Each structure stands twice: as C-alpha cells, then as structure tokens.
Image (tube, rainbow, N blue to C red; front, side, top):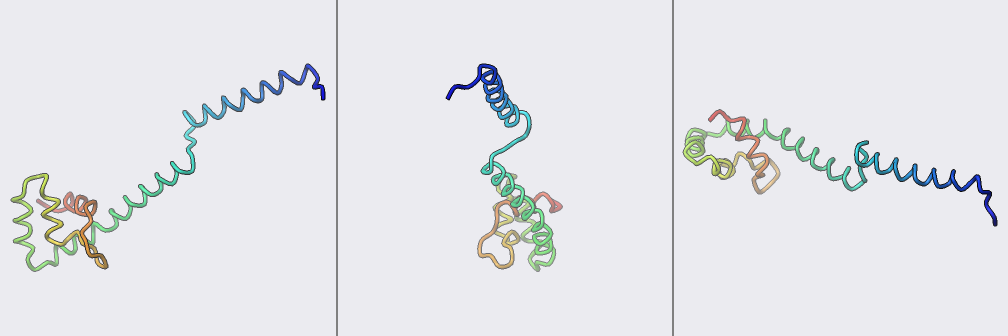
Length: 114
C-alpha cells in the first residue's frame, strides 16, 4: 500500500508530539505510574495511622499508675534513647498488638511534656 506523501509529515508530527507530551507530562506535569501512586498512598496512610494513635499513647501515659517513674526514666535517657525508653514503658504498644511501634513512639515522644 502506498501512502500519500502529504500524510507522512502528519504521522511523524503526531508521533514526535506524543513522545514530547509524555516526557513533559512525567517530568513537569506531575504524572506518576501506578506503582509510585501506590507507594505514596501507603506512606500517607501510615502517617495518618500514626497521627491517629498519638492520642491513645498520650492517654496511656496519663492513666499509667507508674507514670512518674517511667517519665523520669525517659527524661534521664539520652536524646537518641528516649524513643526506646518510651517503648519499654509500654505506651507505644497499641491495644490489640503485642509489640510497640517505633513511629508511634517517636510521634508520642514529641507530644509529651519533657
């Protein structure tokens, strides 16, 4: 099949235009692949879960009968060991789980008055 000569520049222009739109869309346009969108959504949901559990951690800290001793232990610990001290205190262990959560402990530590 012979294509008319006038059709070839149009086809080439459409192909080059499609490639340019794709490149510009993914670099400047904010387009992302499905995998990247999924990763971002998972990170946002994890952040939201941690933020929603901080009040639970603070309530556990307020209602703990041994609060004074545990707070003293946390205050005495060095800055980089305070999260582990809070996890040992049990305040970062959410109801229904067996182990403390590091992210919740870090966020709860920021909210505690030390």
